[in-house]
Image 1 (cartoon, one colour):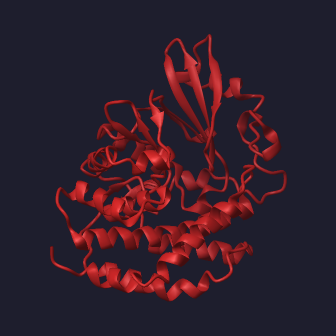
Image 2 (tube, one colour):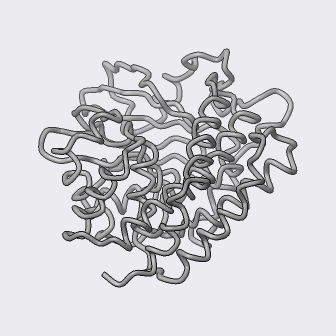
Image 3 (cartoon, helix red, strand yellow):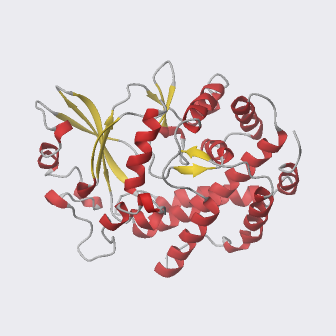
Length: 336
């Protein structure tokens, strides 16, 4: 964690403390909490959301926070209220805020309206548009548009922190060990493949760019003209091919669709970068498997995190043990 972004971690409550997670104004994000009864009290204290009449609708999704669409005479906003224990997942809310501002300035993310770290609240502008699903990501007409959205973010200002999944995975593993969280059987058997990928990728690193790092389909919104990238809680400067590979892994794109995405991003076919993105997609799933294991053991949100975990683990296990894995390790070194 960079010096710029340490402040938020100090505000995180321990999710294992007796009594569950309860915030100022009595907000309760335990599974039985529902929509917090005192949400109006919090929003009354929030300048951008205080105007009335005010309507509040909970938005679907959000595995580390609850998101509310808030409409007032001043506009329509999204209020993101984060859960406790974010530090276990390498989420720094101060970095999320800073990087969201930078992404908005680049024209890639929603405008940032207000930040109240004492209440774990980030207010951003609401983007009118269609939320993508995996089929949208795979659609041939959308692949160059997604590449353009990534370039828009990557060509913007650098973020205040770095994100390296090789480091994050080791941090996640330490958390699961120290807390005694369940991880998939056979996870450790894949360590040699993970290490081989790290070694191969280090040999041709091309620097880092500001990345979202968590572009599952639901974090892509199409307003009809451009695709917006939302949710910067795991953002940081990273390898551009991690972004592309992670998009493909989360949407379960076939290799040929990932190749089209990488080609659109770089403006020409680059076999080494396609291999790099494929490897980093596998690396992302190996790390996210532990993210899910931590959530399965610690999250107050009512969600089947174990199925989520196993989906990623089974995907990376197939990839790491496939006949093409050694070919990818070699292809990243090609000159193209």
